[in-house]
Length: 189
Ligand code: ITT
Image (cartoon, rainbow, N blue to C red; front, side):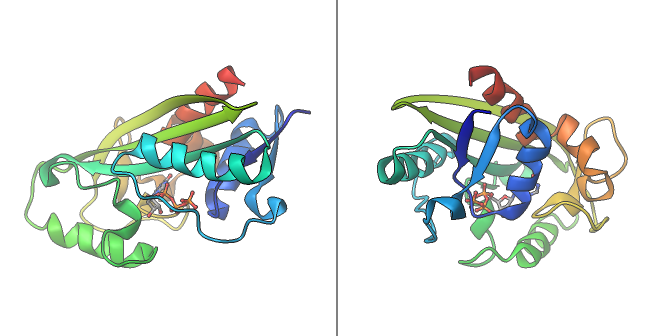
């Protein structure tokens, strides 16, 4: 089976991507490459960050690899938190604080439309390619559900009444930003 490194330190993402394409490709975790440091993400676009992460791994290992970057874009907040989704409330990856800040910033706001967008950068034998996926939906008025990660307990995808965190992983993956982007990645591989 073709091996490819997924440049992420996020175990949830690794699990999601394996569930989508794990029978077609052997997804090698970042830890298996010996790279343990946090990979810099200093671009102001999702595509830029995804490329930066993939290049970081490719330059150090020479292995085929891909990286993703995801942002939650809320219309009433002018597209925020967007590319800053991981560090919305604090400098670190404090998901609970990020969700609390999002709810506070949307207090009393009726247009709660939002979208998740994922950009994926693939490097194979030095050649770089990009793809993306998105899902539209709305931000709930309170957290619901225990599944998923990040902003999942606040995001209700279009056509549904439950949040991503209330869905089975299979259902989330079938319609999610990352699921759609990973299907495009699989076509490119
Ligand atoms: P990396 O190691 O891959 O960089 P990360 O956790 O920093 O992992 P991102 O920068 O791609 O991930 O994600 C930005 C933020 O968006 C972060 O707070 C995530 O928790 C959140 N996020 C990403 N994908 C999500 C998803 O499918 N559902 C809910 N929240 C998500």
